[in-house]
Image 1 (cartoon, rainbow, N blue to C red):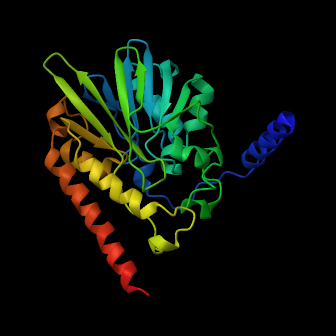
Image 2 (spheres, helix red, strand yellow):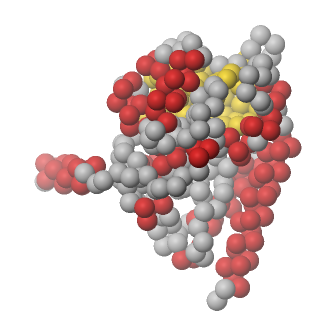
Length: 290
């Protein structure tokens, strides 16, 4: 019986992996546009594209990469890491803030080329395994990234430790079932910083929440996330998209190292409040459209 179960599992996995992987067309040009990599604070670096944020955390035992952009971002991120003086093959752990193709596109390629371990929020594990096909909203596009199975699944407040750095994963569902943020401490020669890498809880469905049968807890998950994210304490914050934390208004390419640019709690809470207002407006509209 055990052999039969294992065989069925392998057949299912093969079936998902055999699907044609195709990203949606006409993605914003900013998602593929090059952007100069730079040091944010301490051992945290920005290595993504103009809008799709990827973060490299450098430790004394290897490095951590968070988010990998679109499929075509593979070479861009590798080049950005090299420009900073690091070797992308020193990546030991891959992390993710949400299981959508604009953050997972090069994930499997990075795992294959580096041999890194991939850790993900447990609630996104199924969507990752199906290449996005089982996502409650984006699944309508089919497989939009190469399927990948996490080496380790995480739950709220789990720790990810590599060398001299320890991250804490924060479960912030809604945008995807396993959307998450990370907090950790870093330091430079002047001071220590508490860093938040936030997955901002934007709503992407047009249907009523009650009609999202593939994600029956979506409304309550958003409510939980807004409440949890309002309680966070940090010095510096960044997000899954550069536009979400106003990167290009705060920093011009070629600017010198300056962690102070990202120490603006006010913009974080303002953005969070704006997203919550959109969420509450949707609930009100849902109740009126009967």
